[in-house]
Length: 133
Image 1: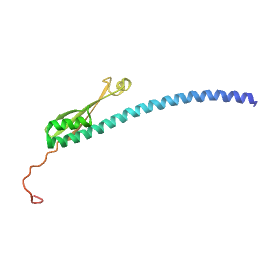
Image 2: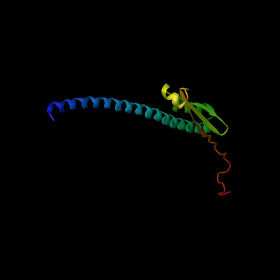
Image 3: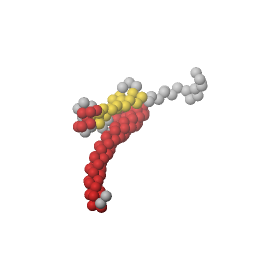
Image 4: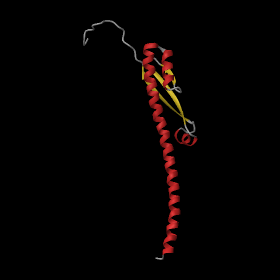
């Protein structure tokens, strides 16, 4: 095989490698964007869970106002609701239009919620209770 033919084939393969790299890079960027969106869901759920726990504990000791403030300090976008025996937090996560069409049928947001049981301290009755009543 003559050397000029080999050089011509190598030049053609360099162009093909550049095109393959462009497609692979585009696929990696799309995968990374989807991964970051799901990481945002997970992190928002964890923040909401911690805000619910903190609000529930604060609600048991100090009442409604400080509980709302405590939840707002941890997750400012969360809406808080006090039911009889639970503290319920909800949050809407904005979505890019392309993902919103697939996941939420065009609502452009995904709602997550967390319910923490309200901690109620038992009333103080006896300093030395009888064990195993």
